[in-house]
Image (cartoon, rainbow, N blue to C red):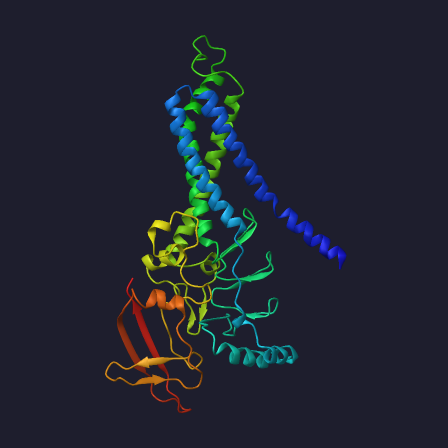
Length: 375
């Protein structure tokens, strides 16, 4: 027991090495830019002031978003997704997977769930002992189920999910801006120092233009580091912007979520504008600030296509009648706040087609509603 605990503590300690490395690089870049470049190297006072003001603005936003990404705890499923005591005891006693699934189906009938496993079963985490909400996955590194999990990032030593995905996007954006600003403003002095080093023995060497001190090594190395990070961050930032526009997580991009009617990689896509709003919120004035403005609760998400089936509570309004066709096999559950927010006030149904298949051999009807959302 003790060796396992010690090993786990060592793993947690080692997991901070990438974060410490980034912190050291950022601290050195601050010293190299402010002291070695602006104070020692740049001769013009006006240029110094402009560079220092813009640098500190990008630096503050970068550090702020990075801090929020690291220290925002991942959101977990609420208690309503845990098995009640009686069902939990029955589930643990059952040895056959079929009987266990029947227990999970009874509990899940009152929960807003639209996704399933690849085999069509209820998504259940034996480790956390909870029914997984839509888009929720278990992170082995964090050892917990994370709402709308995107991935576990070693560079922030945290799981990126519903609670900090906006912070992660802003961290990529401001780190890219930070590196671009450094590379752009250092470039001219990089060229001068590089020329100075290559023409040191020449008679016309411009030694009087820049001081020949150790600052040149900081400036040269600063440009290389900024350019290297800029290239790597640009590809990652572009990829996540594409994911936000499609309303997908990294996991869903590699493995499409499975709904009751099969896999659908665009199942949660509501159109570009509403996809952006789900991550950054309705008020654009807060988009660039690392404060939480994401829509919903992380437990339920509006879907692009709603299929009515016997496993989900339904209420269908006929176009020519005030009476509704209801499924009484399961209790009705209200639409979640996150669904109301995106689908209620600012989104209307442009087309609704109700198709009723003929009676099957067992006397049941299959009713399907196709709803097209305005993008």
